[in-house]
Image (cartoon, rainbow, N blue to C red; front, side, top):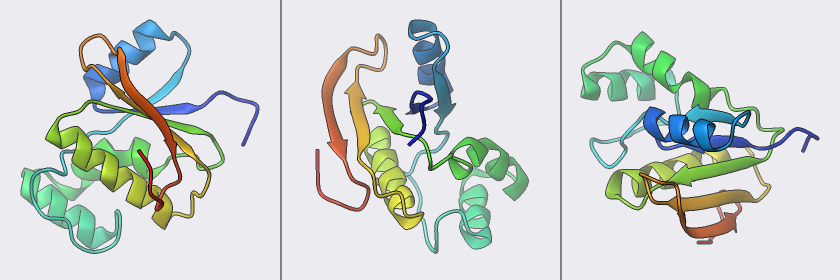
Length: 135
């Protein structure tokens, strides 16, 4: 953990904009995927994984990698706050992200905020250790 504030991972670009407007200066990265659709095989963000997800979405592997770069390159020395809504897409993405963090060895508690996707009002908030039970 560093002295810097947490990195927020937001459910997409629009939620990222809302967070940055509400909390100027916060460090926020978008999660640009929808794991409620399509299959995911193999390891997290391996070449095969990226190729299969890119093909599912009809984009190049380079474009997919570019869109997911903020998540792929998360600084795991930082505290993380995951900000997602309640819909099926957000639930699937949250599960994926927690699995991905666990696979990368992130063992500290992550703050999870389930919010209203329009005004960011918090519906539920809890800490969860990636790979553990919680929420």
